[in-house]
Image (tube, rainbow, N blue to C red):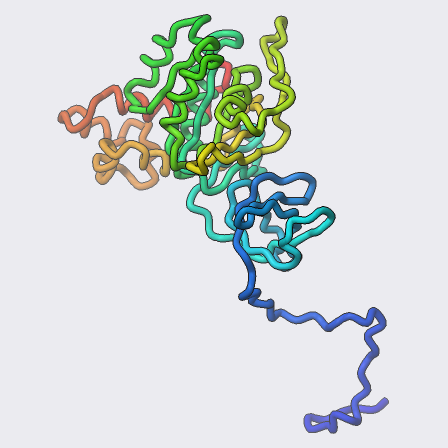
Length: 336
């Protein structure tokens, strides 16, 4: 058997032929300095629809990104055919760091995190005042996800012609959440659309809500040129609606002054991924009072310094109650 020493002649060493004929693997990745930037509009079975300048481009993720996936709202760098013509395909080679994320799990015991939307400025939580009945626990969970992910919440209440909004407004009044109340008649006339639009201009807004609350109908009214064919219906027996949106979809508002991201109707909203310590950041009037809290304080235990902070008059007790209601939402089911 022939042995080679430290100083062998390269010509004397036999190399194995590359039967596949491809280039050898390397850990050096291309920089793609000529890549163009775009925004992911929707994702469908591994194919991504991306807006590049004023063109709609179909793309797929580059292998070099590994398991990192691009989602709706992501800013991505692309190479390849960016013409947007039929049967062309570009390649996503980089994903820009996200400014915010909306995440959820199937339930509170599910460790698998689903990132729904990236880089949204606010989360519009759509709930019907009747038909179907409001689900405050689901609203609470959406609020926690918004605060945790860096989104500003907006409460949109629909079907006020069927029930008044007073109870919900009383429940969430202490959270200082902006809200809009709409009726079906106002939606048809356009008056409600204008009020909602005022909250959306210049922002990227993700819309969430359980099926049947009128979320997609509202999105259709806000973006009439991109109307959906089906607006769904509510089952008269179960009170549940039929899903009309199967994947998140970003739509530009008229005048290019903001974006609406419609998401699939929710059955549940798990919070397994949420770090409760981040929720306090949404309560700037209470946050200074946590300085004397015990280490790893949940802010909902006997030794929490917030009790004394509020008792001394630094903040409204109703705000502390609202914080603790949200923090405890993981321990409650959405139907409680």
